[in-house]
Image (tube, one colour):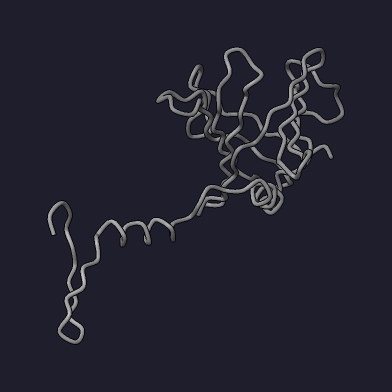
Length: 165
């Protein structure tokens, strides 16, 4: 058969050909698929991300103390709300993945910001119901703003956030 590779099997004297592409399609079908809206919420809830987080919950939201929320929004989608005092925004979470090392990877669609972009953030849990960002980068770009739990700009460790509610 010209044009593609094939596997042969003999059964009762008849030769049957199976295109390798068909086998690859079957294999791809078995691979993990993108996370649905419901499973993104489920993964975030299982990891403990749902709620509002800040550096200091007793203080009002400000530029230095943003209140960052991950909530179940309309249609069961995961929503990321940010409040910095006089600035607020809301974005859709496209994907959440609990990684084998226990960290949580979150992909957020900041389509209402200028310029619009998608950002990948990886959170690590710390004792006492706190978390911190250990990676932060614009999806599709090679540069990180946070890598290995440190800000690229100054080398300082990322601050711990506590769950407010």
